[in-house]
Amino acid sequence: MQKQLPTLVIAASGKTGRRPPIDHSHRTHDHITTPHPNLAVQRITKTQRILLVVSGLIAAGIGASILATPAQFHATHGIDLAGDPSLLSEVRAPGGALAVLGGMMLIGAFVRSFTTASLAIATAVYLAYGASRLVGFGLDGMPHPGLVQAAVAELVIGAVCAVALVRAVSRGNSAGIRAAAEPVHALEVA
Image (cartoon, rainbow, N blue to C red; front, side):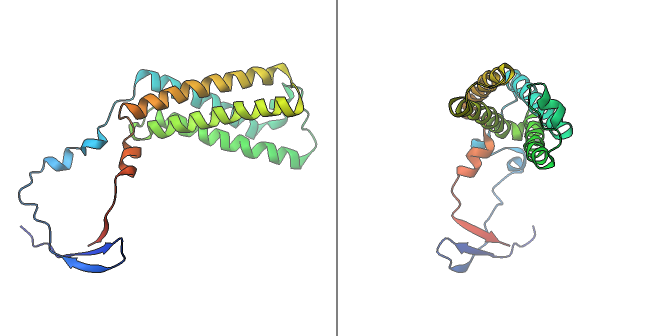
């Protein structure tokens, strides 16, 4: 067995010092493949996968359409953006962001370590869009019926994503959240 050098410890107080090496000779190699008890990996449920694929495809598709052809996309709801480069730029930017966020939702449908984050992203995106439209209805009046339907769809998708997120966190399907919550007492520098 190779001799382990002492480790420099930087405590929360900012003091440094040396501590003797930790004796790991009593351990087997099981600790390499056995996850931490708080990080029990759950499988992506069928509901989570379907929800993230649907919400991700909708967000990515709409975002890509707004990014690529904003005037044509918004013309379907009676909005004329043609001829104003500044307005087109202001509309393309959130379209690009929505496309990227939709892609992040899709990643969580297939990558277990990203599922909870993707559900949080989907919940935030859809509820924010729906709630913002409701604010607009109150301040500006009722828009094109297609935008009212969009608000209803966004709020429903956001609510379903929120329920899935709460279930994922409550059943321990949130390894990243639990790992981040564990206390760190000192930073070790080898």
